Image (cartoon, rainbow, N blue to C red; front, side, top):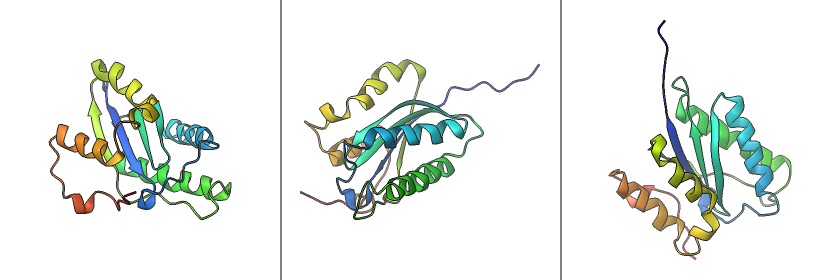
Length: 154
């Protein structure tokens, strides 16, 4: 009997529009639960989710039939609506266009899951810009810094 066997682990990173620090600790857990539900309802497996006030990290086990760009578009659109409908961010909330996606093997889950879950500790030493460009360099992804995100330097 033929079957489809797979092991696809994707680390997805995206930012709040203009990298504004709008994700408040008072409601971030509700946001993460909402996004987890979206991912699971799309037939994918949520392995880790966490972030900072200006960006989010998601690690999923992805089915081969899933189109990543469609999944991320749905996560961003639906979570954007969730935040705005609940008035979590009175000034209005929007995600930036684009995202980063990085693959991992099963043997690397023991490193990447704690990395995502410990974002706040990790970012006490490193900015999001430093983190993101290090991912791009580690994965040897050609990029033009002008088109990564709309950075706001504090």
